[in-house]
Length: 580
Image (cartoon, rainbow, N blue to C red; front, side, top):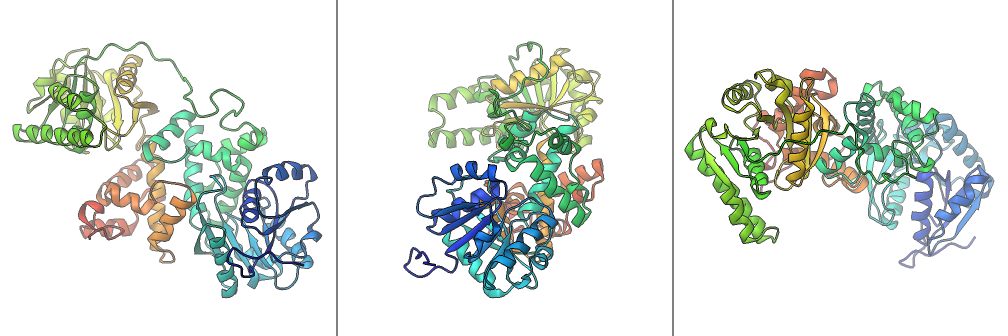
């Protein structure tokens, strides 16, 4: 057999690569390999799958692609990659057939997420020459991505070296990981996606509310329910099943809605319908209407209570939108400092071309800073943004209830505390709502609008309409600790720290898998340092107090770093060293 030459003119270690299973993952791998100039033997035992697979592989360019239904046709392959469904028996049978067909030197790779590579390696018949390849095929195939290369205690070192070199030649970034449940990407991602499916099933928030919250609140390339559709709900369910069987971790126990949808044939993007209907006008994730809210009472003046980062950011957003805004601080000095902070932020926006000097002047003219709560008595909406302490917040709400007009809507910007606790400190719980802005408030587009059991529809209408007028995207949810974003985000972040604490992976490797693999704007450990480890521990403790789930108990390394004063980027040290 004539071997193709590599880009540098040297013979490639793997010049002919067989890919068995032409679903989402197999097709992505076949395209990637063919584009590098190698020969691909693409195998699927389902003859009906070959034609669509061939159509997906027509744009590969330089490489040769041979389509077949016969495993015996792979005998000339240097590397065999199985990408069949997530079932141990199926994978072992496929690789066992490949073992009988291929030369002794042929290397095998499995694309499992939830199963043990070591077990598959034994089932293949050549444990020393079998590795795991975990990649993320739902993103653009032409971008650089991370590929986890999974070795077992029996894998030859030279095999791992050769496979990692291949991944680099394919234009990707190999990340060596041990054979642990879910590796990095699967362990962190599948639990998060399952949590989102459970949240949807519990009707805590709408499909679009969940996805919009995570894309706008965290900058993710897509929401978790759209992500499940891209993976395939059957694949996701099987992967979760395998991870649960292997770990016993309840976060991997598939949400019943996944099994229900798979049984109904709603498999996601590949079937044309899953959480989204891909033949419908809103298939791109446009908001579903939910219950229509009444026309909101007009808001003419807004009050903001607090002088910290969130309070000044919310006040700036209100003033920039043209609302006369009164910021209430604890003292005249703090009020002046808050106004100076807003003006400094507006000046930065002018320098960056995001605001005109005239808009800066207009915004500052709309903003007033005072030290007494009586100044917000005539406001139509007052947003509390004081310290994240429920006793302090309840005191503020009692005072606002006593001093504000009967029609004033009172909102809390809490990120994790129960809104109902604030509401019950007043005599108007129906007029109390959560409006959770994200930092930096002038820039971030998401506002979680949190309704308690007593919040009136008129109050919700005011909150949604005002958030929209501020140029934000309001997303409604029920009053539960963490709301949408923090309830999904912090178990994921905490799990990443626990993974780091095992001592088998570096912080850089973990972050690389999630940024290059999933396309997240930041890795979990980098994001924790940005949020602040003290803030993160406080949120996790609040979530754990509410739900009592072990995954919400702050990881010991987080608590130890906080005790040492290593709070993240703001202190120069955290999970990483940020000092120059």
